[in-house]
Image 1: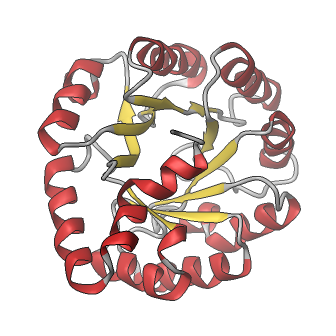
Image 2: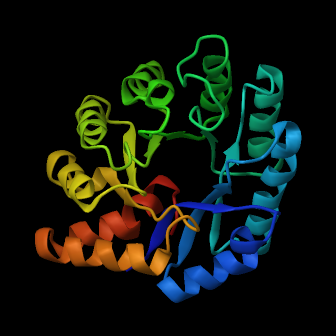
Length: 252
């Protein structure tokens, strides 16, 4: 079984976010590959160096790191669009993440977010949204639904799927049911939410994620394995733990 963690963070700031520490955690947890982006506390144009750090990690460990870029339209829309181009055309990253919670904008804002999302869609890569109960007005799933409906061919990753807020979890699942291009990353959320998503949408729409290093990957994996062992088939478990991500990323 291929194990792919669909939500991890690294950064050139070192400590828990250093690439070497990231690889150590992966090995301890028995994780084969990680979808990896920067940590959300950079300042302004520091995003460029952080995106490069993710790129360098993927270049050094292409069999382990599935790099994603990050764009922040509050720096400026043009800067965010530039980041999309650099991350896709120069770095060959798999997609771009937008985080309206930490970066303080609505993810369907017609002036800030949508021009950047258009750039991502045109580039033909995946879009990831932070979908959390923190600053939920900026990242509520109904905003993601508007985007997903505008670009039905673009896969949209719903990272955290509402975190530990049951009302948000239910809203995410309900909206994903209407948007077949949405895929839910069950990181920093609850076992109840993950199992509800699997039972409602099917195992093909849910991805294992840990939010490392904010959470400990070996602990999160053990929790997933225990929950899935009781309630889904082994084939469904394999999809959630890595098969779905492998399909989305065209991994062989």
